[in-house]
Image (cartoon, rainbow, N blue to C red; front, side, top):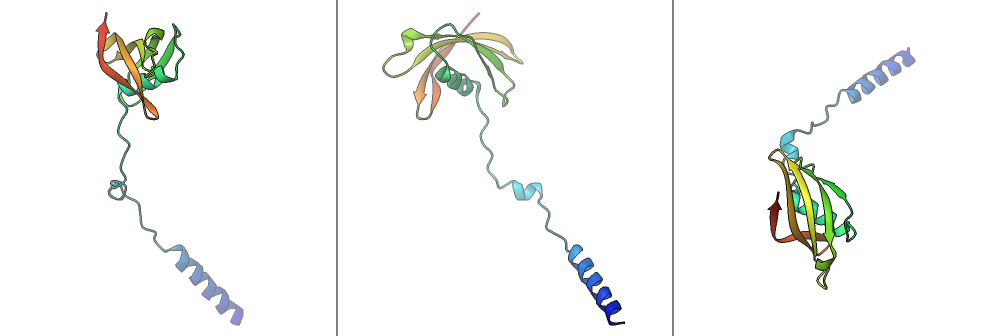
Amino acid sequence: MFSKHLITAMSIAVLTACSHAEPLETPLAQANIPAAPPLTDQAVIADTVGRGEVGPTALAWANPSTGSVGVIEHIDASQDKADGCRGFTTSRQSLDGITRFNGVACPAGDSWKVGGDTKAIR
C-alpha cells in the first residue's frame, strides 16, 4: 500500500515538473538585438578588389543584401601605389540592368573602400 502511494506521489511530481511553462521568446524580445547594417555593392566590390590579384583576372562578386552580382574584369597595376589603392573595372547586374564601372579601391583599416567617384561606362 505504501508503494502505491509512493508511485502516485512520484507520478504527480513528474507531471507537475513537466507542466511548468517556460517563457516564450517573441519578436519583441529579439527586437533589442542590433542587426548588422546591410552591405553596399561598393563595399563588396572594394573587398573583392582588395583580395584579388593585379591584372586581367576575372573575379565574381555577389551582394546578398542587394541581390546585385558582377565580375571584376581588371585590377589596374598602375594604381597599385604606395598608398595601396588599386584601379578596377567591374560589371554590376541589378534590377536596374547591367552596368560597367571604373573605380579605385583603397585600403581602410581591416577592409577596403571605394575611393572617389566610380564612373559608369557602357
